[in-house]
Image (spheres, rainbow, N blue to C red):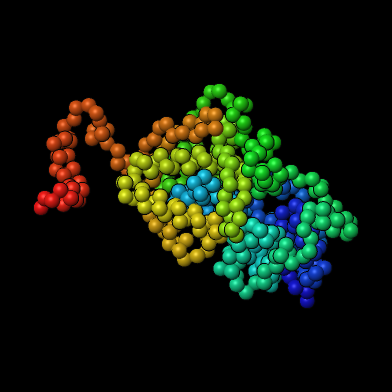
Length: 401
């Protein structure tokens, strides 16, 4: 019986070549796995037929959008995880759910191996293979880009032409893109020179500021224990909330970044990312935190978020430490229930109104007007105790005891 392998398949050029290559070089029966994490109808349309034409014996398309948002996006958002200060981890979050679903398909079909189309230069090979190792260490991993001698887009096109396998790809591909419900990333082409500004044809989800509306738009988001549940008072499934916010924020040019980041494998790379809905959710949840969390809890959540971001970026989702960090963050998020109004305008998402049942903010205490609840004379004793170490040090330097 031929070895059976499940390939993470997109229908793009790379995986269209990997499919027949696995059959020829490894003698495999190949099951194509397509995880729908919101990459859009354009990429998914006809993908099953493409897979079968390329040599697959079966193709499984699995809708992962809701699980992606509930189990991966919301936890990452709640921790406040941002990689290197700006990247909202769109590609990084999608890899563990795709790997998990791929393993499930492999078990369903009795496969003994899994394969992916990640190159030997990128982060994704680490993310996929770390997940495979955690979930199914018995499965063989096949990484064609680390095995074959093909090195260019032209090599891949020639391979398909020799076998009369149809493809819509051409020798010219301006950008390398990865899209899901949370974001879209753009790399390559003119972006490889960091001195080049991003050409306007890079962007797909967001308008340029010159074309964005002059009038701002307000959107109200309701959070329950840190998870977005309503938009303008309408309760929506989590994936629909992200879809809705992507559409509305994208019109206003919200969510663009241009970053040179440190890849896990050691090199720097430049990418342009669009995360319109995610930027709105991030701003909204932080506004609820400002009301609810005391200073030390919020500071610890920020520290936790830095570590969580690194672990997600590095493909360490299925690890005890990541689970422990999430357990802590989830506890911190328990009181984060409330509403926030985020104003969308010319590339900015700004919280302008907020309220929460567990708010620690008290107008009675904070007012600059007259009040009957705060005795300002009490501050003197507090300041003397708070500054005691500094005053003792100064006395020592002055020769006083």
